[in-house]
Figure (cartoon, rainbow, N blue to C red):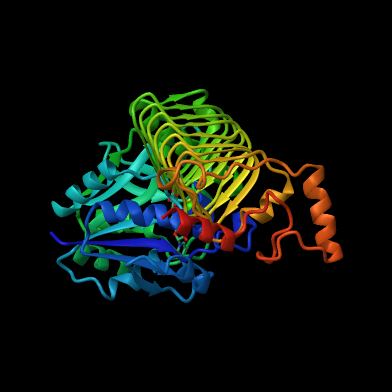
Length: 453
Ligand code: UD1
Ligand code: CA
């Protein structure tokens, strides 16, 4: 049976008290809706329809990169009304799966069960037993235990409010049947809305089979309506990801104090200390150690590399056996070859550092290429200037001494030269911009390279 997934994302989310539409509120750094689209995609459906409305421009812009069909629900008249908008484009012989844009932790296994029951002709819905049913629709069963209706909290009698089996909101059904039940919906309820949940009573009335599939894991179907629930879902998500890393062989100093906001893969015997934040696509090779308070995003780190406390690595490629930090900042488009040391208060941006090279203290390396075996000496601010020349290359392989620059903080001599430079006395007339002995000079450097070649 062909599958059409309908994701409801048009509601305002009043309880969020936010200018950001509810389905764009971030979970692990990505919009709630994007998590739901990901779950839908895992089922390989024929189509994914997202019903949008409130904050439509914002929602569409945030998910412009997703291959989905957008269905406008101009007025938000309820979840049933939202599904009706999508039914105009779904053929009768499809199975329809309805997901909610604010139920982000749903898993493939539960959805597969829902779809299988609907493929067999039933209206299937996912229910769950909870301790606190506040806000959820209650599943009402008849004397024989068959589901007879779903009653919303606001419409429930005191006895119905005691029911602990609640509606996750997710359901699946044959498209032709769903269309017919939807036609029977009215707005005669506390919220004056077309409730999708009323299709259950409609199906029962029409003599169709209704199947409630109980989800064992309440976390999976948790809906996000306010900032408290958003934080709860975030904590659950974090814990799930932490468990995955531990199962893959990582040791976590404290699984409650790691933030995984993306797709993180680890090799064996990785150790991650507290308060690490891992964002986007992160790969940590075997035996990598991450110190406390490090932020690593969209980077690859080779085996046995150690990142010490309070370091930030963003869009970089780091090879094996490197030592980074404490207090290092490795910025985008940086490539560190094996055995490189980047020490405290060193910032590297758009640079390639050759194998075994070291920049251990107080240095800025930007748009720079450093060859292998180079020791970029302890710097004061002058390093900021001298090493910012574009494309400096120093490579031990091309000559033993000449191509190795080793520089130290400016002493009295260089201070004098700097002062002279300001007064117009130039110690290096052949090299404009060069003020101290330690300042690297590209022209000078190129000459030396040519001489060595
Ligand atoms: C809904 C269910 C409730 C269930 C709960 C689970 C109904 C009537 N109630 O209640 O039984 O226990 O979810 O989380 O379905 N939306 C639209 N258009 C609308 C209204 C809502 O697209 O006109 C979207 C919202 O953006 C949201 C989803 O539908 O993603 C659910 O809407 P919401 O208002 O949060 O429903 P609940 O009150 O939580
Ligand atoms: Ca909800």
